[in-house]
Length: 356
Image 1 (tube, helix red, strand yellow):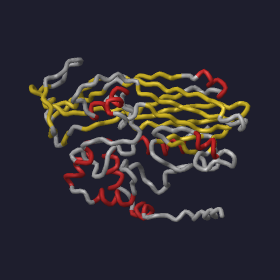
Image 2: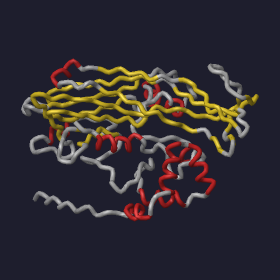
Image 3: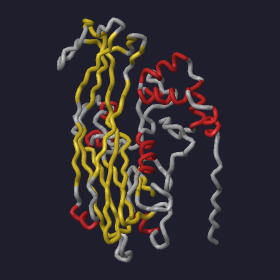
């Protein structure tokens, strides 16, 4: 089972909203992180009375064969808070395992570079072993834990004196992935319903003044699920075959929308995304890479990047490695590549005749 095409789309989903144009931490749009598919700690969700979620449910239909094997993969981002500190006593080297004395600052200029606070992200992934659908009646659960911690990176001036630090702080994450199968309906022999439940189980102490930014450090961000099957076929929930429309409609999905993915015409993969997609979503071959911005239009964003001032580009280049890659890619893009971004007519599908 080749999931390469699915992974490309999933990568775009994972980082949708990671950083918005004009891709600078000082931009108002980037002061408050927004993402699709955020699972916050349960205690925080209950305090917010339904405005946040701690559980994501995927349900879809599968036609298994005699040797069907199902694989479930869950991916999300773990937020890392990056802050900048100025050392109270500059030195040559930071002692290993010792917390340096520093004051947090909004910006620090070191050796011709600007360093600013920012929220970085680490990719996390949980993958099940291939399993027969008949074995899912026991409702297997994969528990996961990812550590938190504090790490310091030295910032040295032109004389190689350590004058500042980058402080990266993250909180431990805990959760579970439960998946199981059940007959979709007695009348539809050979079709089963697959369910995947993702829970954020991170402990989180509530206070009266606790805010979303703090809860986000204990959250699973941009959560999505990839289901792959060998010797079987998934059923489209958007355009189910005749006789399966009611069963497709009975699938209960919470905070996510499963669609067929991968090679068009085949049904060995399902991408369950917090962003509404169509069956067999694709990354346009003309796209040079991810731009992160919601409902992005590559041509417009690429041209607008080129209009940034030198100082804005400097901040974009120095603030985040992914933003730096966008800028370098855009500035070196050949003219013929820009022309390809202008638009391509791939064909017009015939309209379905309305029933009378």
